[in-house]
Amino acid sequence: MADDTSRSDTTAGKGRPTPKRGEGRSERNPFKKLGRFFREVVEQLRKVVYPTRRQLVTYSIVVLVFVSIMMAYIGGLDLLFGDLVRRAFGADS
Image (cartoon, rainbow, N blue to C red):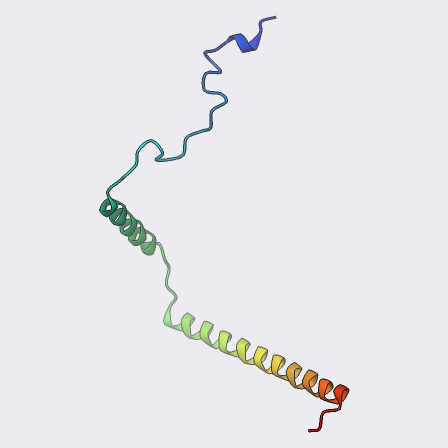
């Protein structure tokens, strides 16, 4: 039976971390980096799907209703706990 550690041709790359993308080359020019950044931003913005006017109005109404309900709920709890604390400590109101 042959010893597997004696075969250096198959294990030559083992034990070293895999290099990251672009690690071999480094762009030192900040204007190239800035240009690349803006190109990628524009590329990503082309993928964005914007809502229609109707969807935007619907989502806005849903958010406003939810926020109003939460404000009423938290406001009610605040009044309740405030009243309980005043009664517990005997403050004159």
